[in-house]
Image: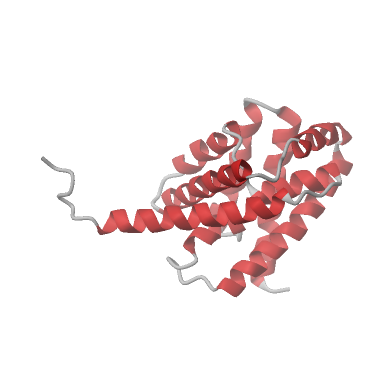
Length: 197
């Protein structure tokens, strides 16, 4: 098994732990604990699609590698959801209700787009030496109802269900992360004196 696949499986497990806490505890504790997932992923250098896609051009990440990460995250995430279901049946109802509320709409795509923006900023700020982007960003996207494709596939696994909204979540996360990457790159090119009076 290649290192990339191992890192992708591990990342899915980290997110599944955060998602388990979210389904089990709900607001306001669940979203805060969920941050453990991304914090662990960034600390250990694991491979999460939503944490990598914004760096596709910035870090010379190969598209083929990104697709492998996505495929493994989705498969391992769904399996982790099934394991969560077996571990504690009490979270099945919460997962089913959550998935039932998803609609295949432009609004859903936009919510996934905003999640992508937050994910890029959270990882980028961690790379700059602070975990605050993760500790505040993760609860932010959850409280706002933004959509994270890997968390969603784990929820679907927990509910033993499927939803085509997963496609919108993937596309929205990808677009939002790339948009944030582009805008941050453009901002960094601005003259240091820009904005000074």
